Image (cartoon, rainbow, N blue to C red; front, side, top):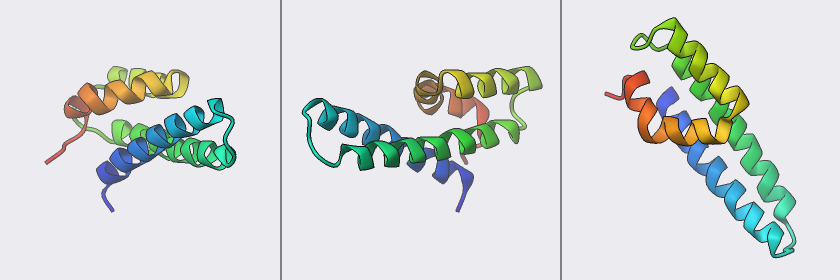
Length: 95
């Protein structure tokens, strides 16, 4: 499986599962713990695979790699959304 596929699917599954789990948690529904833990695990896979994708990229310099890595570690949600919508085209070879 390509790393790009792992990055995309882990982001989608993690993000949507966390949103659904948080919404159901607000409504005091049962089973939200499973959704939240599943979402967090998927998002952790996303963070690790995205950092790997950034670190192995030949399209950006080492300073940009360090900034992406710091962003993923400290502000993973905001950085993840930005990376998937805009930044990934500049970093990864998507062909």
